[in-house]
Length: 168
Image 1 (cartoon, rainbow, N blue to C red):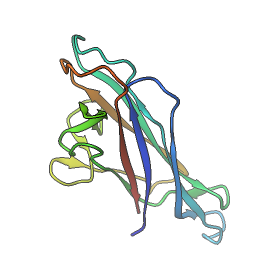
Image 2 (cartoon, helix red, strand yellow; image 1 turned 180 degrees about the horizontal axis):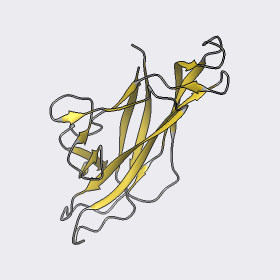
Image 3 (cartoon, one colour; image 1 turned 180 degrees about the vertical axis):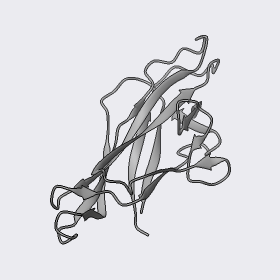
């Protein structure tokens, strides 16, 4: 099994997106019996929450997109089956944290808009997200970020860095 890792940067203030990119492995190419294999590429958008207000009535939400695609090779390549895992970053998988110096702002990343399953590495109560194995050359996976309300922290720019691992 091959794996590639890219970094996902989480921001609490709107800054320029800092996507990570990595390439490794091969895509299947069905046009000429697989003679021209392309590489599997991955890119990640930043998860930008914007300005946070602890007095807000509810949680603050944002989303992140992980895109896997066949690059190089001939047109018609298809993604192999893969899984995407996210690291804990500065906190733990059950309680991620963005930091501004020593101050911490708790947040989480979920696998669906229902916010019921934590996107992690498959350990504990977390799940990875699967994709590929169909006829698509590109697939986008969405993560749903949440900062819970009523966290009275020191004002500042809070960040965290998550490692995104695509394995196939």
